[in-house]
Image 1 (cartoon, rainbow, N blue to C red):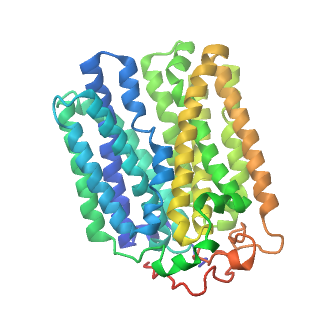
Image 2: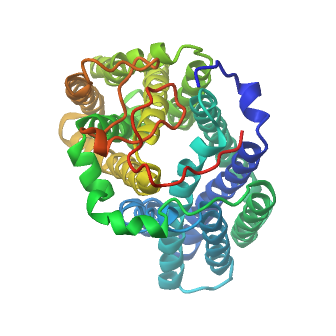
Length: 443
């Protein structure tokens, strides 16, 4: 399907509205809970290190969860995985809301809560291409990204204000309720679908590679995962925003402005690419945008003033989000349905892991060479790595198979290994498994 799509077309899809609203509610609860946890642990321990550990535990299990649990959304009904993950997180969030819970129990619950988010995200992203056909899918990704970033910004601000009025335990209890509400919305608004990994297909397991082998065997998909993981490197400035502002001799308000610059750029970037009506243009722009996302941070080496820094960080965030949306859309459509959730889970885990590692690297480098130089150097390395992924992408593209998306044939080598067209403006090669029934999709 090559029909043009708009944000309005996407919002008209009932199942997308349910998934979208459920995610926004969960994201809001998550961000409020992060603020409340930081305040609660600091109130109980007066330790910045333990507070930082608690906050880090909300992100740390990403790689483990993506590697071990994301595949559940391929072997179980994805709607059921979404609901089960939400109810599990509701129970764990309820533990956090219990006054006086021991810190070790609190940390274990925070870790498990983040771990349970991996199958939810994998199932949600794997389900979206079936809910949004053709050009509605990348536009839906753009709308989802812009709205979740906006909710995160608002939630951080509201969370701080809410804790002036109520106890952190009340906020944490509210977070548990958001998961219950999300599960109810998905139950009511998303229809059940067959398991992607059909039982009768297991006789052909020898022909089906694991998600990791699938990526290794197809350099096009590997390049797309590379673009997704590289998107995590441009968050480096957020990890050193406070010392950066200090070197500017700016006030504490400048720290908040610097932290808001990247998410604000992300909102604008998602809105912008969502309005591009040409799939071919989105794909052709992916490599230049990935390079520009890194290059936008290089001038930080020159000690720009606050306004210039905000502009540079926002530009980097906008370019990064545009690349991330397009790479996710192409990757999702290039992976067989029965491996879609596991592959998306690995890519998402890689993204979050790169974010955590680059923040640690930026802090360590900042102590040695200064935060300005650290950010500029990380931006340059990001641009160089993006060029490498771009070269891999170009070399791996079939010479005689151009899609209307300006991209690539989504196959994995031989016709026997080629996946079926999922409707995202791609050529229609022979199905990977002609005997396998196609999953019915809803607009």
